[in-house]
Image 1 (cartoon, rainbow, N blue to C red):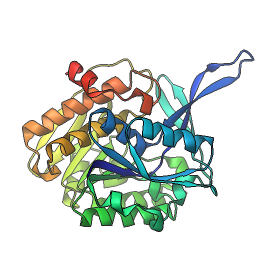
Image 2 (cartoon, helix red, strand yellow):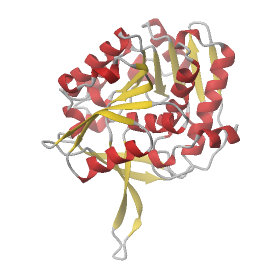
Image 3 (cartoon, rainbow, N blue to C red):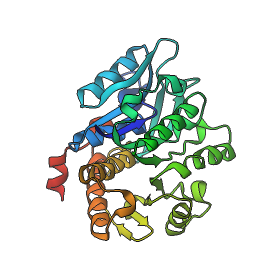
Image 4 (cartoon, rainbow, N blue to C red):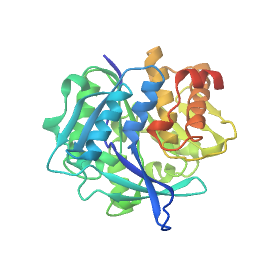
Length: 314
């Protein structure tokens, strides 16, 4: 039985790394992709993760598979396809904040089909997690819903973290439609303060959470940057601020935070709807510490802290 299984994109983040002697920008090849980042955090925190998704049969795909294998993520659900190239993201950093350009026309991650889903993995996991980048294109969109329904039927908690990347959608309207289409299946959901309006129509974090709870989500967490995070269920409302940090690279910060939350739910076998106020506060503090340590290093997967580092921090 896996603690957390995630479906979606695993890709290479080419991150700025100074300039060459000729004055040209240098990029560092960093393994990334939100679902894979979440699993890296979960693995480092001592739980058992599995990945479902597709890479190309190329140098980048090989690096990604090796990376996940090395950090203890089960890759029996990873498909290597010679017909498509592994998805690449080029990151530009200004004052530690990121913007993206994608090489994904189409990228291998968008080409996962329902037939390629490893159902042994899907049906044997405590928590099944997905994002919204697998909803941008067919056939991955249908494959995502297929896997979510199978996991839910098998008793998994469904976790959803919509990640808005404007460049990957034809229009904002299309993004809103497809990003919201997963809400009815989600038991626990994370949105950032930048995504509240897109997902709920409300800009205020508490109002946004309320809208999503009324649509059937059991637990909503809104990340608030330097103000930490707000957790809301029908019974509980808790906000916990993080420590002040000097960020080196915010890539993977939200994913590391989410890995922290999911790892605690899996460890304690807690259903999101049943969280007590004390648990909510404890989990948020834990996840804030995970994210805080992550932003102090470069890259996403390589920056994920260990359980020991997080406990020392707390």
